[in-house]
Length: 115
Image (cartoon, rainbow, N blue to C red; front, side, top):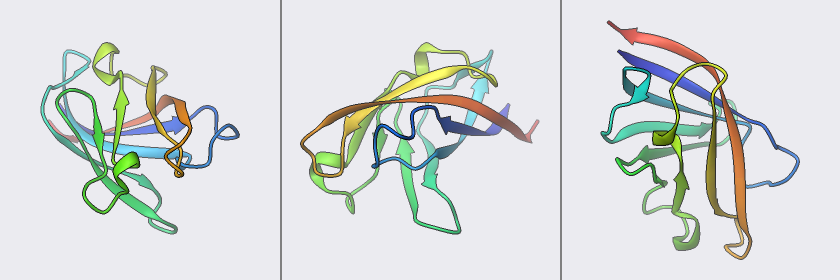
């Protein structure tokens, strides 16, 4: 199944570098994310929008426009089933590149994009 997955930040008051949600368009097989590169974005169309690629190892790559210290984040997305209510963890650095931080996201919505 190919689906749009929405992740909602569960600790928004702790850090300022992530928006409150991000979206990934991905292939899901047996409730697991298919190990392929997937496109996604953080933010909203009404405000700042940050596209990224979710790599096969679970890293989030914001691309060449991101500062070096903030380009890559890690996630444990491949360790969890992809279903509404499931939690994942994303780790990286604050915008200043100095503070290591951890974000908890909950899958809040899944929309089937094709059969």
